[in-house]
Amino acid sequence: MRILIVTPAPPRSRKGNRITALRWARLLRELGHRVALAESFFGQPCDLLIAMHAKRSAASIREFHDSRSGTPLIVALTGTDLYRDIKTNRAAQYSLELADRLLLLQPAGVGSLPTPLQAKARVIQQSATGLSNPPPRLRSVFEVAVIGHLRPVKDPFRAAMAARTLPASSRIRVVHIGAALSEAMAGRTRTEMVRNPRYQWIGELSPAATRQRLARARLLVLSSRMEGGANVISEAIAVGTPIIASKISGSIGLLGEDYPGYFEVGDTSALRQLLQRAEEDSRFYGLLQRSCRALLPLVKPRRERDEWERLISEFV
Figure 1: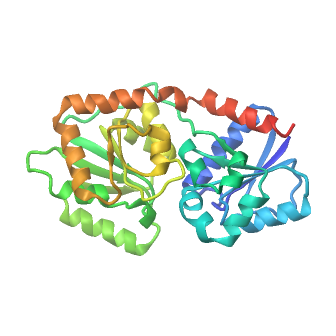
Figure 2: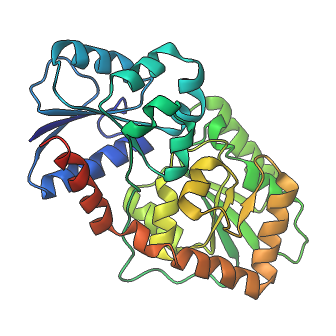
């Protein structure tokens, strides 16, 4: 098939949606399809359109539906789609109605869809690969990684705030990887580094360098207020780095309801306690490791490729 993936993130962007679109394109090419990427639909020939983001790709979705009636349309839903926009935004709601299939990155999100549309939902969890030669973890510090661009929806300073009040004996250091998407965010990171010796912001890195730093870290903290299904969770599982995450639907759908490393959204004190416990209590840290290791089969690339093959076969 000729497949067009529409993503609002431009070429060379390192935003999550673009990285996901590139991985999907690679998997679909491995399955024998011809795949192109674009920021919008403007009449390109294709046998199937995959539109990322119900709200931000709404114009492309409408244009495709109106001009290519009967040609399959998959709408991939982001966290802001699932947990915000489809509740109130008419353009996002209309995208759901026009789609032949709604693609989610984790199963807990299905319940957020309007009941009549849930039959359209398909879940394909994002995959990741481990490292054949992972870097050694530092002994001088207990390194905690925060990975993601600095946006309010990510609650990006929660780990830094939690680290401020750790006891002097703690070796925890929070290392934040990601671009500041506003000057206000960049200014706050610089201020935090001056005031908080446990916090280091190193900006945006390449995907390969980010994986190396994630593998070196002893923990990943994902403090987001909403996520559709963060790929960094899959990446952490693949490289063997345990996770502490805010207790939101998007993360519960990946880690499971009973995962032991949750804290309530915005609860700095609870996050600080989890960080301190992971550093000081080897049994708790081991529990986090075993819980993530048990999820490893879910992030295998072969599994994601097979699920894509099943989804595409619905239109052949």
